[in-house]
Image (cartoon, rainbow, N blue to C red; front, top):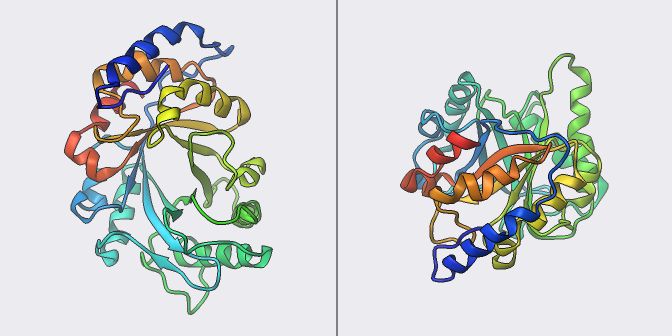
Length: 297
């Protein structure tokens, strides 16, 4: 079963997708529709504000990307030219609509790493004090008094060491709060199972949502169901999201006409199906892809 690309091979992929559907092993309890749609914001200045994204009514989670430098005492937030000073008010606006807002760390660059357990502790303390409930004096808060709901691990490069330590350190901040979880953890991964960069972090059991990117990889697009089954089986306590591109130019694009019957309906048979993650807001604004996803997610 394949995710459909917008290229001449798409007809072959559709045929493979339809013919393979009958071989899915159905879990004992299917989740069905969750109504959850996540989107990455911050990758293009022309995508509009975070507030505008949340006002569309098609997202339940917004992921701000990226904190692209960390780990050696230096930190940098890359929002592709957006006015950072305006984001805090937008975060509060989104949260007033019951939309969760996460900060994604890492990205596609190579200026981040966690070389030691101490560096993981330092990054955890920085994130807590700069973006969450921490109040340490002298720590600059880019979003002012706005609080993100958690941290997303988008780790593409560098050594895999100590992300488990970072997850534990971040989660440990929750111990002083009863009836609430101020630090939620998610991870956004390439679809090939396992993911060597955050495998140990996932093994902690502290990551509640996993966004699997079923795009930008031709083999994965052609065999997405096999990988989906591996992810859902490996982490039954986490909600697994189907990551899809909003752009028809990306490998792995699924035409809206095929989105439900060929992909979502199959994915929803997993007991820990979480919803759909859309990459990313700029292309989604252009194609309005999430308006289809929200109908069936």
